[in-house]
Image (cartoon, rainbow, N blue to C red):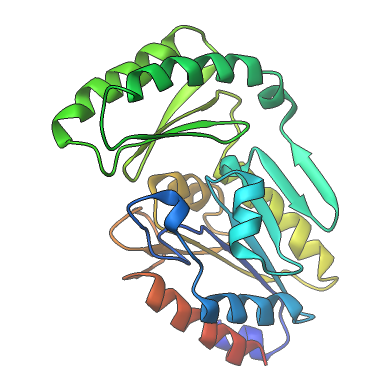
Length: 251
């Protein structure tokens, strides 16, 4: 990769946020992108031979506000909504299921009210039930409640992340499809040959992107999950070191 970047090939860097670029916190609203990480991402985003895309389970509005890297592409709700250079995509079938999601949110909110340490988050095209601070003994009941709500109609699926259960529209579109789309769009915008593509992620949802990009990108797992990556880094501090190396390598 060093020879490719120094030889003039472009770079498409795609990355998750929580647990990858920024350390995970007990509550999702407490997550902050380290200033040095933002500075390095901004340098890559400004480079004429590089493009940066953030692919997150957070809502599009939330991830953009937390990352704040000019020129970067953003995919929120695991890719159900994407924005770059003034163009915004929202999966049309997911949009049609917003009312169904709102009903699911109301039902889960009643369940969460009885379990201390839970946080129910409305994301516009998804509903997330965070249980990092909940008693471990409550997890079976929470899982059962989420599965029950999802089973009330054929239109929602359950997604299990790190200390979070999510309901999202069952539309066969996730981080894998979003990463593939961003790779094509950002790569073509460079106006040259096939770029080097990197995808960084720490969650099982990022495994979708790893599978979709197999053979077309270098996939870097951060932490213990997910599997089937080309490389593995221990945490966000090591990711910051990789970003610094990329800035140097691309020149």
